[in-house]
Image 1 (cartoon, one colour):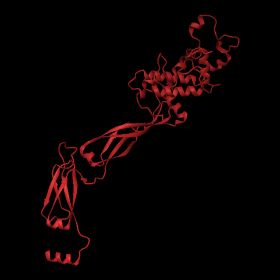
Image 2 (cartoon, helix red, strand yellow; image 1 turned 90 degrees about the vertical axis):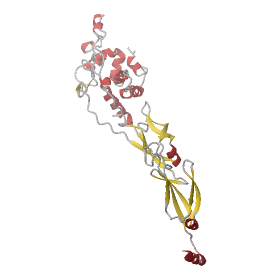
Image 3 (cartoon, one colour; image 1 turned 30 degrees about the vertical axis):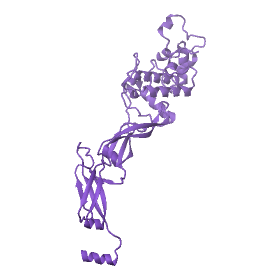
Image 4 (cartoon, one colour; image 1 turned 45 degrees about the vertical axis):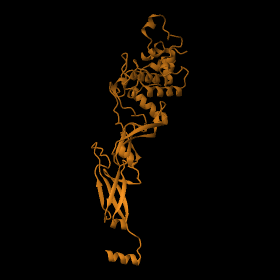
Length: 363
């Protein structure tokens, strides 16, 4: 018969739960209430400590057996019945089969002096103290087959979860009030992804919605994949190679969640190329036009029209610049680069003897 169920209630399980169910319930509760994940919840540290204490008792078959029969207070007193039980009547442990101290033979050696390995199995000292919740947390997740994923996966304040309540201060192998040294938390990695943009997007500025997949751990420590949509702001005039960082939105790993960096790439444009803050447009001319003159109507990236009239001759590779019609200058709001018109002269591939002679006479 189970004397009390408080520890089972802490883990939200029944007194008939199996060992695997106890461990699973603890892992779920510990991940939920870990102080590093609940920095704005002052009650989380206490709940984390309580579920750790419940698991420490219920995961040990010997301790669980004693708890089921005599309750937590009996364990905390090191196997000594509370004072009121002595004055209320006959010692409940002074039965025909009782051993040392009036306890049943099976528990007399269980509580008698010494520590683990001194004459038998698990033993309680005169005043029982629990394991540091953080040590129990790391050990349990390491032993669960998840490797060291949760060994230093949380990095926030630890004092609240590492101190006892009701006058029972927790101890560990490093001494009273001391905490074990902790390995440095690994730095969170950064993942880079290309962000191809049209020249119009870079000219006008736009907000791009990007759907990403990221790997997370659920409350049971299992790896899952979720979809997230990020809104990526593109400022007018942003240049190729610019980086836009989102902190803590990538895959979950030991040190936290990865940062995601989008690197701006420029898509090829049918009419324009970019040269810094300038936009370049190339006009093709045949040799006759280049020598004798030509007219063109050119449209800029923002829809303006330029009427260009050249009497000639036009030198191959020459250009004209039109100020303040190019790309916005991102670091100088309100200012723009130039719109540059370059001239490319198409020379004929062949000439007839007559044409060659005519050219000789003209030139």
